[in-house]
Image 1 (cartoon, rainbow, N blue to C red):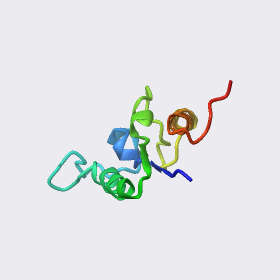
Image 2: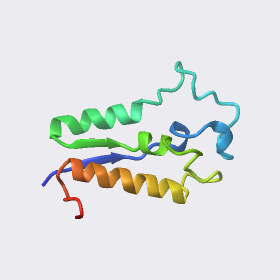
Image 3: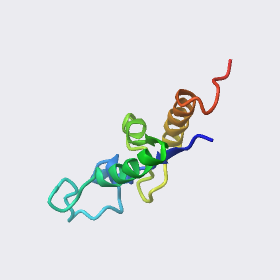
Image 4: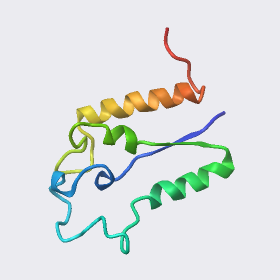
Length: 103
């Protein structure tokens, strides 16, 4: 049975710090000497590859939103975030031939 790992990004990987009320304003997430925003996805992709699992990163889908798709006061998605993810995952499953497209 095929396996697809779906990687859910942290809100700060998708939204600006100002969009997230809980994000500490004293941290500069773009400081590459302290933070590697690619690390979570890179590690999971490296683990999935030798197992023959496909890997789907939700960042492109969530970053396509016209506004932050995460709740401003917690790390859950807003309604439009859920819609973007559902469409993206559905397309991934069809492309990977895990499910068939509806007629």
